[in-house]
Length: 289
Image 1 (tube, rainbow, N blue to C red):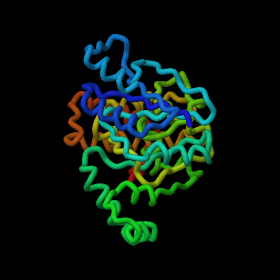
Image 2 (cartoon, helix red, strand yellow):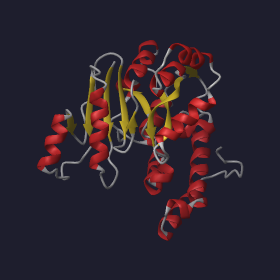
Image 3 (spheres, rainbow, N blue to C red):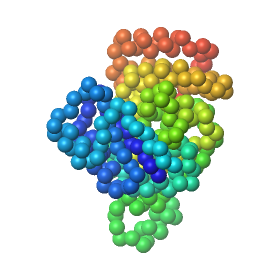
Image 4 (cartoon, rainbow, N blue to C red):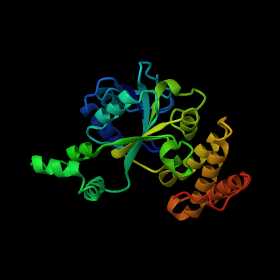
């Protein structure tokens, strides 16, 4: 597997988190992985930042070169995401069996304690026979082998499932086949995922989290709105159009219903409300779980 990990920074870059993510990628010592920090040419770097990026083999390109080998993938992350131990090996085991198929990654939330989320996850699966066997054979308290042992995936054909759009269309946390990336859309965008998924009949879902990710509609709500708006211009098959329109309506309503949590300004709320009014055939049932 050839993999480009493209880091799309937040508006204010957390350099400490960026270098932690870069170090986590390097620590997995996985051949075929390249890492890029997606910055425009006008964003200057200090000498210290340049030195640390070079030490972690992180390139800095606004339009990174995509891998061209067979079974190549692109994964967009933000610098405050966390790569869990063993993630790359788990991804490779799936991409080997399902080449050229997009892979949706289950995630832990980066706004909550990772240790607590892992403990809760293992508690939920405490009666799993794999965990029981591991505890009988091992004296180690390490959580990572336990998570690895629970890993499983499914191949799903319900690509237009309204309630699963968020995990499939988010710009970060989905492994995208590199040869299906379109230069017409930003590399990390709802539009990119949408154009790619609409050409497929299947998607793989990796069920045990391998990264700690954020929620775009919560963490950067107006950027999420702009991404949704841009994605409405993607040419879609006829049967995809109503499904995506319904999803957009639900997301805009969610943004407007959580303005205090999202910290949206009054002007931003007005823009979102006007966009919502432009959608035809409103449906009061457009509420995503």
